[in-house]
Picture 1: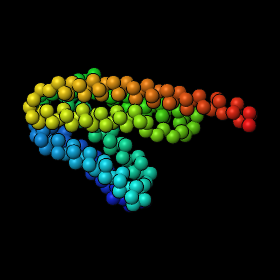
Picture 2 (picture 1 turned 90 degrees about the vertical axis):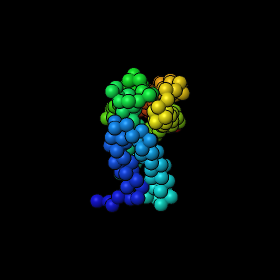
Picture 3 (picture 1 turned 135 degrees about the vertical axis):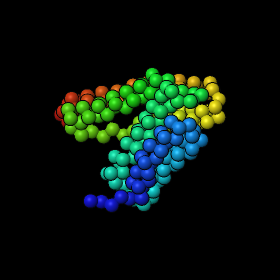
Picture 4 (picture 1 turned 45 degrees about the horizontal axis):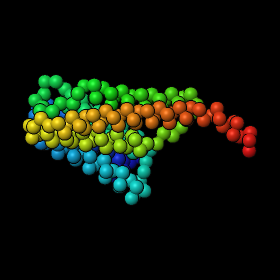
Length: 194
């Protein structure tokens, strides 16, 4: 069994911060919740940097890091959607459902492609990275204005930006998966022409 690298330890710390974040939001400690979210975000940047610089990239880290990111963002969106919390700005349930649905569809698509035609690599696309960045900014801005107890139209702007990038990135992933599925059918023809 491999020992946990410092990068993997930071990733686990990020996952452990998620329940603390939820508790802080639920009990109205929005400033501290923002600090915890920012700390989790910093660990996200640091774990990758440490893994690259120290040459300690691991299979565990490659699996844990995106899992921690998804858990943090999905949990944040769900909590900021919950009715009954004293929040000046609440994320619409349709956005949270859309983002979770997108992630579920991506995971299912990768699983189906891998089962149907064998292992394939799905690297994060530029649209996926933009979507993640947009979700993070949306969450931070929503939490900041909640902390300030100020209902802001800026939150609405980022809600619709999140909607747009979710749709664009979903279409991109669908077209990428379709190309990968189509590849094996074209490969024998290419092989014969050589």
